[in-house]
Length: 159
Image (cartoon, rainbow, N blue to C red; front, side, top):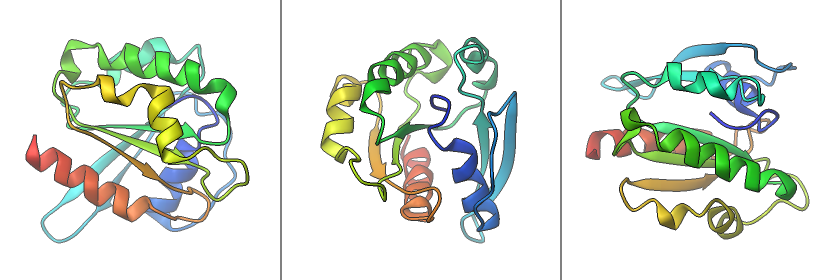
């Protein structure tokens, strides 16, 4: 999950197909399975992030084992909106104790915020009721994606 234009669909396409695709705003969702190794796979859901779609996020939470929240690290102006959206979805009872992975996307671009800046602006330290991690990545270049989802798998196994 994440706001529109954070790079969720690009990220999903790159990690599943190894290619960059032209995307348009996601209406509904995209889904795919990521094979991590012979014993582990993750089903990844890319849920539309437009403001009108966010009330529907709650319909995708049943049996959620980890939340991956994607943030555009070049768009400081929208971080407060992302922080509110993240806080809202994490308040859902079905996500109690569910681990969180924040992906600070677009780190390959100039003027991207540091991991510390993104973490502070999202107020991640306030989430003491769950394990969370933050990872820099680039959906278009594939940087940090494999490592991030290996960490997600570890977070799931620990929780």
